[in-house]
Image 1 (cartoon, protein in one colour):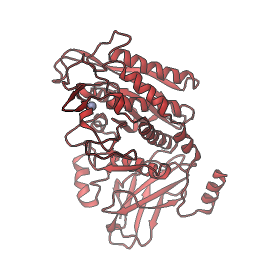
Image 2 (tube, protein in one colour):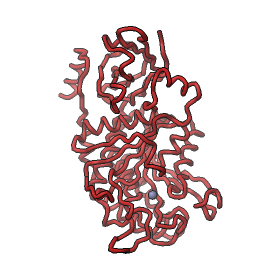
Image 3 (spheres, rainbow, N blue to C red):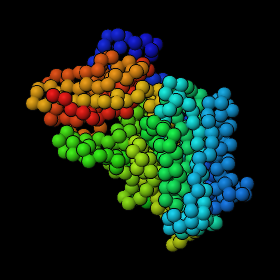
Image 4 (cartoon, rainbow, N blue to C red):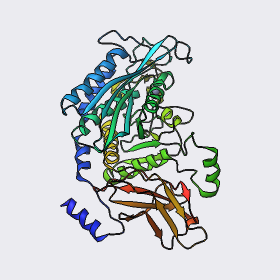
Length: 443
Ligand SMILES: [Zn+2]
């Protein structure tokens, strides 16, 4: 029935239609808080997962933790007819490379690729972190459960793989546990370099770092709010692109920002009980996360996390001081909230992996004319395109118009000066590519 309605909409060429895919609701419902709780508990029970910790023990240290993560991906793989390619990606980091590398260490990531049927070399990535730390960043022996930071993101990533492995996608999805985060974002840098070497086309990375705490140090308790951090424009942009921005706009419309808006939009449509907050910055003030090395390499990447952090429960020796229980322990994690944020990731991975690629070239015209005009390069497999526009001060794409299989359109009576514009490709099931801000101008 759903498909019939969709087809009717397409046949009738309705200017704009709100379409949902019932499989997305199935994915939300399939994410399990119990399994996430079990996995966070297992990860916390490795004692410490510090990047420099023991790699030989079967029960303690980062070696045991990564072998367990790999075994979970392998288990998922054997339950889905070998749908995952699971491997370690690693780099040797030498003592003294950074202040927090006090001995030579292999930074080892655990990667699982669910290969896309149509675009095997295009990847949307979900990441969590394997490693943990206490107060002293080079203390690699003390108990460091890292239950929220970042067993929550790691467990969510494994759970998303379980749920999405039941489906086939046109684009590839990568589920990855990254290491070396607390020592200086080493794992992300290693995987981003590996991606470049291997010519991966990365659509974007959804980096999950702390998705389990609902009780903020600010006194706010909320299991609905979460944050999506994105930088405004890529650090790799050219001088020409920077100059063009002064005349044509785009200061807040880089590829990471479009990915952030995509996650915001999908959440609003399918999980209206949640309150996603778009944060217009790379990361928290002066702090870092594993999406950044991907941004540094020119890829789109965002950070998804809780809105209300609790600093007494991050990077702390476990202790009680002045009546405050310090430490990143299991008791502080809300598994149902971690489940919600895992679902946010899963539906966005699915939606992007089912969608056609974004149009490569989007041109805009309409200078000193009554109507804005857009042209774009045809996308193979697109059923149509969605033209988006918004007030220049609006954070999200407030307006849209669906057009069928054409490669240009005039927005009658919409003056180019007063809005920002973008174009997304739409697949036959209604899934959309991230929006492309115009990257060329015509007269
Ligand atoms: Zn941390």
